[in-house]
Image (cartoon, rainbow, N blue to C red; front, top):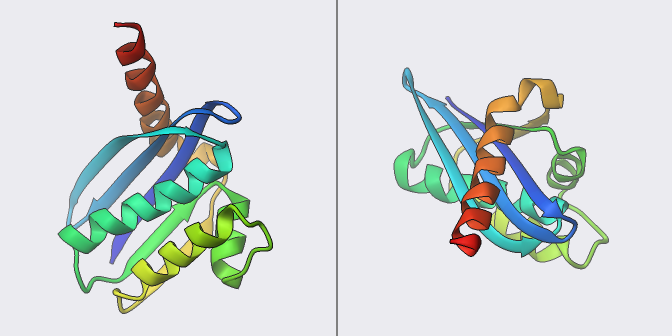
Length: 135
């Protein structure tokens, strides 16, 4: 089973955003800080899951995925496979489509204090973008 921790962050709401992804698989750990451009914090949280699914599709096809996120909105939306929010609907559709290529995809909510590593990676992606803009 592949353990995936995701977090999204934005500097402002909306603002410069980033995704942090931390993956534990087969005794090793991979981490990603991905720039997302301008969006809300909640959108960044959804995109972190999307990007993580894309990474898992390339690196761990056919594996069982266990995702953890500290975003209650993202976890509830994916669990229910439903949202009234027009911005989140296409993001949910992408997640569900990508998740179907795996035999099992689980997502559960965890407290922020258990998702510190992914949070730091998301904030690093924001810093990289802000530093690039000021260079």
